[in-house]
Length: 553
Image (cartoon, rainbow, N blue to C red; front, side, top):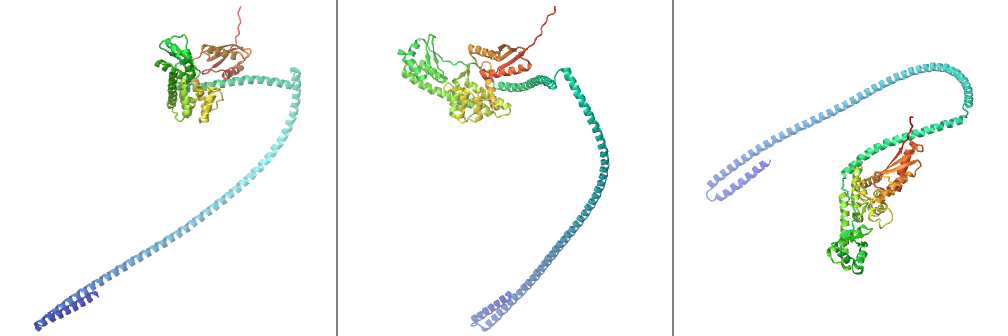
């Protein structure tokens, strides 16, 4: 339609153009104008016809495309309708299959129920048959029991008659035995019980001794293995130390300068350091005496510096004393920090570290206490590891166990109790405090940690060359051991041997029997533990020997 309108418009435009041209050339020649107008009209007609044909062709093409598109849409609609119909058909078939399956399941379930009902009917019939058989069996058993009951009644009557006869015979036998033995039944019973009691006492003592021997052997074997391993792994050099307080001087002429005019230098020195300066006839030597090892060390350093400097007067003594105090305090702190570093314990209170460092100048029976504490820490850690325990608390308790020895000259009480109070005051855990307090038996050892520290302390003290004691103290200790053993009844002789580490007790066999000898050894060991102080352990051996001698003539 639009093409037709366009063609008409073009025709009108052509006519208008031809009319215009006609009007322009009208003045020249009418004939020429008429021919040109005719030509223009013909051209316009041809152009209009061409445009009409094109419009008609295009309209036919659009009609064909519309027809094809309509056919395509119809086919698509037909396909969709077929798909929808197929889908509906499948849904109906699936629904029918589900209903059919459900019906089949119901039929199967009904068949199963019928089978179960038949099975139950068979079980009921079987149960009825078994009940009938049991009833018949019970009837037969009842008849049998009635017969047995009659037999039992008869036998019971016979037994009662026999019992009466036996009772009479027993009474007659007892009367005859009493007349023959000359004692009553109660007396015979008591005599038999007394014999049994003595026999049981000896047997129980033998069992106890055997159990103790076996248990002790096993425990000793395990303990020796752990201790030998710990001692081997913590092999330390030991040499008994002396607290050296003798100071060498170049010449005896220096002694007068040390004393000073009217003794002012020696008085100033003793007043500042708190020590006693002993100047005697010993050549080229002066001695410093003090119960406080730190003060004694400060005095020693002060005197050595004064001797090296050569200027000895009260002002110089004060100056050298101040330097010595700073130097010794620095050494104390360094020794404490080094000890904690060596044992891997880094969270100690600073005051505990300082107190631990003071043990550098403390000795016990010639053994340096700080080195002893380090060794106890190592031994405790090794033994704890062998027993499957945490070695860190064991090392901590071992390192701090002799802490009280640094201040035991300032505070009353045993060093174990003093050390426990210090540890408790500076925030140590209760198990560490108890191990420190129990390592010498001031309180009862009730944990494995307590026993480990006690054992490590004894091992360190008992190493050959670790400690020494004076001859008088050694003799008194041996005499005390023999005195304790001789105080018991039945002891004939006592010998303290192996430097007081073993006591052999000879007993009178007529007074002390085998069972009592075990108890005697335990009592003597317990009394030694409670009344004496000694390094390591003391073995108590009770020897009971019986000899029979005769002569052939």
